[in-house]
Length: 344
Image (cartoon, rainbow, N blue to C red; front, side, top):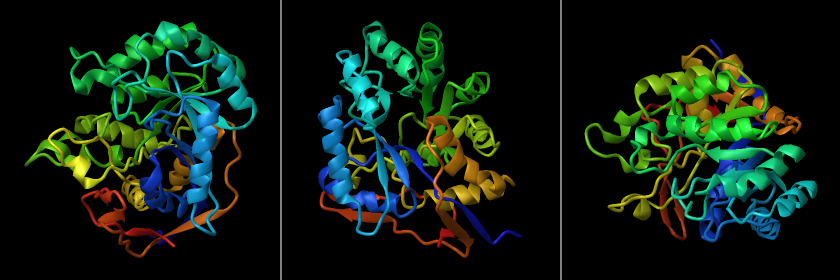
């Protein structure tokens, strides 16, 4: 039985770090295990220009713990007023690795997102020309569409038409949650990738709702039926290079999670690798863990894989239930089972 596993150091291709005191408190959980991360731009105000991205990058670098080696990969928040020339200049300078599409109102701090997709067509065409990926939060916001169907409808109504009308556009379907998304990704060419979160491999909608509401399992896109969770696990552990890790680790204080209208997000950065090792072992796929966490993402983003390594040992893992921040306590995601694997 495997008791130790050494893999190339992973990257996180979807991460929320927030800003200010929260950034200072949560960043060490990522830098302890990950070499790079795609940083989400949905601050208030959002990161929409190259100047704002540079300023945010500098704040992140200033918060990196002493001795840690970590590179934030910046993104721009796509709005209907985004300037294609600014996007191209930001990529040419090496500042940004992607642009993020939030349908307006889809998730936390997405009010500045896109409602009229025709208005962003010039930006998408420029991105296709220069090879800059578009990261998409794949949900429609039509109130007439059931929340559990919004990802599948987005693929049909928005994503597929965008890709057909913008040949060559490289797209990452972020935090996919459905069999529909898995099936769509499997049929596409190498201009499409898909990230899968740690928590969506572990929980389904029963974990949120059965036996009482569990606010710390509430995320967007919301967890779906068990058949969808199993499809995600099959995709993640398959070795298919289209699928790679994007934790969508999203810290909120307990005070904000436990409101009558609480925030969406699971804070998984501290224990993601321990959870993933357990999931992949259960599915007989430990040999595919390195591809999912460390190889497939860099390949899609046309970056080299990390050369340094980390080692996981099957010796039991203990993580705090909370971290303390100047803004208040933040609950660490609880997978609901003991963790056998620890990063050493």
